[in-house]
Length: 446
Image (tube, rainbow, N blue to C red; front, side, top):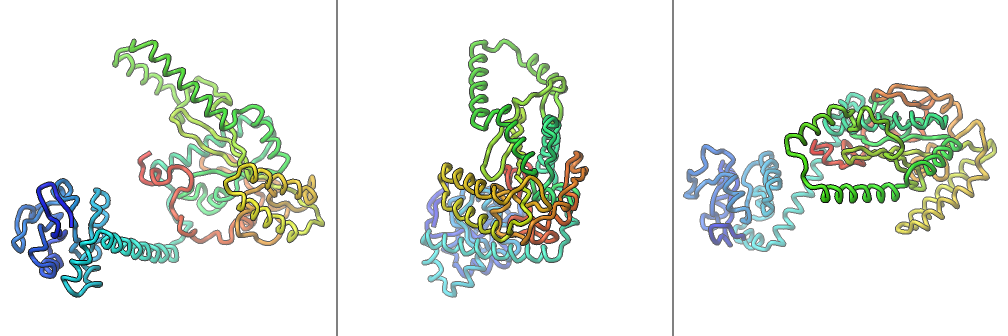
């Protein structure tokens, strides 16, 4: 059932766990089918049990990783050993207690697990059961915990959140001459209400903008910033030029002088890696038009970039039917989904929706709602009516993660048009950053 680096073990297994269940497993498999015991207790490594040598996990990993391992421990300890095997590249393992639930006879079991495809089937069943157990555990946790009492994010994710807030505030400072007031929306507005800042597992930032300010922002950015494609081409060209210059110049600095230079540069940089004395222009920004929202990306010397997303809000006529507008939204969503894979068709879809919606929108009225080209309309939840103007305006300025941003006049009411439930945990994506290297941020590896 597997080979090791010392010899043939085709019809033998290694029992991981030398306690009571290990003894039971040995009796069931029979001595001729067991090559070794393995145990995490280093004090018994090298001793013998039932006539078989007990090896350490290190020896298992180095010499027998290709052998079939049968985990012979109780359910709680088995879960830990499964993780230990997975994390160390030992993939061919089964759990004894689960095997005994399926097989009563030794020969039937041995015959079944000799086939690699059968072992894979058993592992898939193990994973499926574990997912089911975890869903139950998470469900229990969510039903008993108060989401408002969650601690803020930590580590790299927290650094990312604070960088995002700083970058957004700096961007708005540079665009102050446009006289626009983007206000927090989506998960950021929900986070402001519920947590006083970012949702603990969120990592992006979204703003709504009334239509004329939204178009003003787009027009300015498209005229004064690189597009995503232009920015990437410029950076590739700069990198090539620097590489060619280094090759031509050769190693002119010794290691010590280079270290002194780097230390001096580090002392003169701000928290985001830019020289304190250097006034940054718009060359570190680029725009991307995603059709159902507009994005300005802020880039950093360490290669990181943060997308600041903007979504259009329209005024709607006093005689405009909300149900009629929702019919337009539904048709647009269906056409958008059917055009998957075709940028041209999707662009045409959004342009057609905007043209059709012009008969519904006005310069100013007593009600507002998401524009026909606003991603928010693609959600399944809609509260069922226009948003009163006084829910949004006048905007209020609040402190959010150490920076000042605008929020709707009645944020508590506005957020009800965005989310069906606001005081409960979300679905399966709880505590998973959605946009930026999600797992590395959670693990602190970035």
